[in-house]
Length: 257
Image (tube, rainbow, N blue to C red; front, side, top):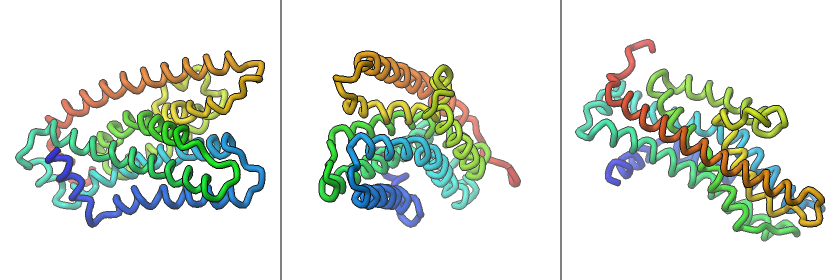
């Protein structure tokens, strides 16, 4: 907890806090304005549109920026010298960085869902089911956790630019394989698709029982959820354990790397 608090205090005079709290206000606010000006908007339309954009575009880019920015601050503070000589075990330092970006991601996503839901209930006739929107935010954030470990690792090894570059590649994979039929058989092996698949799962409540494929669609959603959560767990264990072992032996980047 002390390490985590220390990590949070280091973000005080950085753009990280503006990013965490500004992005959800901007995107959710714009969505509410759009829905207000679009007569006939429905909950399922708003849900699918917002969480497809958030999980398929915002999350891949955001984890790259956030993971890179957290490590970039350490690099600027003395090329990792104070970072590596800090009187705390390497495992605690790595876990502190990891927990910071995880909490930031959850707060950012939950805030976006909360603003969207409240805005819809206040200004959009169809309103919003807050439980569904908040659950989608939690699922989206869970799906992003392995990506956060990966981007911390990439940022340490090759820098902020590599993390951001990878995030844009991840964006393409999330959109192509996470939201279209092209990824039907391979999405489970692509981490950038997991936030999309998990984030859209709560939208199953909008399927009408009268739909002839209702049972099939619900079963498919359940199978998708189990597969995605299993993939997240396995990837998290592998990435986090190997990341900690690698960081324990890491001595910083040489100039020019």
